Length: 308
Ligand code: CP
Ligand code: NVA
Image 1 (spheres, helix red, strand yellow):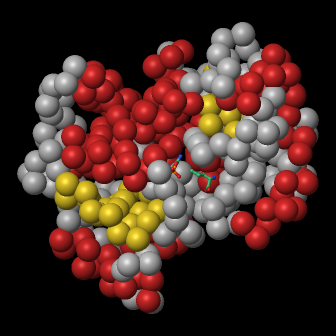
Image 2 (cartoon, rainbow, N blue to C red):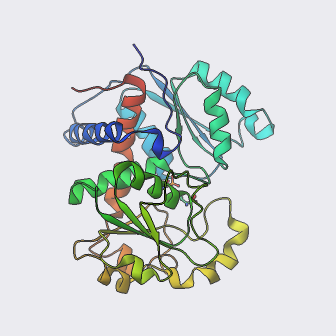
């Protein structure tokens, strides 16, 4: 029997209890994978992946993950489908969700995925929108827990753009009760409503990125220009010049601080090469954990609370 229909459109769609279940399942599923133990709870299930933007990690982790769970994944992009020729997203949702068991979408405005989900018979997963990137933050938090233990009460420094990654960290801080120190250039500050926050109690804004990093348990950043904002690239390079995560920032963070970046990264822009390629960086584990956390997510959405 399938569990009740549930989507993962933004991080706060899941409660702390559900997230703790996902992290526990991730550990089990990752461990089985590392030991080459077959685990096929999604035999005969199909995932449709709809991409309106480029991807390496998201496509690969969902496609490989479905395969490893015994199911199949179908890649669709807007260029090849009727969505690219103006078919209404609601109609596409009605049809696609009659043919597959779960859908992942990477698109522009959050409104598009919300409209799709409202017309879908099956779970819909946000594979990145302009506003949020919840699957990435699942992997990031799992990586933190794996390396440093519980994230509750810890401090994450977010340096750079208040983009989809930043918004999702802020939502996660509310759900999992940790703090985010945000430092953005003037004009690129957090918009609490766009970030979908209930309160402003779990983050603090700092004019100087060094102050945001001071004592932080995790320092993280992302590209200065996200997909869909390429027209602003030249002005962003100027505005963000002092927001490069460098060795000085890592030095004022906690001794055991980690560095994360969702990738793809631009060394010499948002991060100094010595940081992303240095001893505090866990970016490759972070990327790998996309696979394991999303397998737990797919299992939960399609099978409910599996405990074995
Ligand atoms: N981090 C991430 O989502 O990477 P891709 O754009 O390659 O999917
Ligand atoms: N903020 C980036 C993340 C890429 C994975 C973007 O939206 O392009």
